[in-house]
Image (spheres, one colour):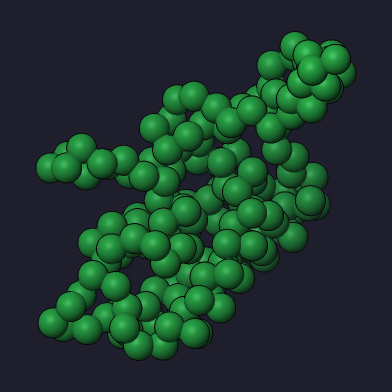
Length: 162
């Protein structure tokens, strides 16, 4: 993807995230402020669109900022700020802080992209470990920044089952 295309997609993602933030915060009730109680259908639709956009953009976002992990020392809880920002499953304190952290980070990525040659092809590099014949294990840091998700075990598993 060319720099200018990626820049447009990330800027659009940020705009959608900011719109989601406004609607989400206006949908919280003062008495029970953990989860939104108004506009739930619109919030769900926004969340689905943001999740899909994040699925497309995550490899590129992680190229410019490798960790999106957030930490709450009082409870010793760690989470992925990108995932929480676009989802609806977390309490207001965590989601609100995540969005407040993600938006400026995206601004920094936009700034880096604006400083690059706009016709340059931007690639993302997958970290991988060879070992399953022709298949490769794709490593993706979990929310703690360690460990990985094994995506491709099919051939090795098929051989093992025989």
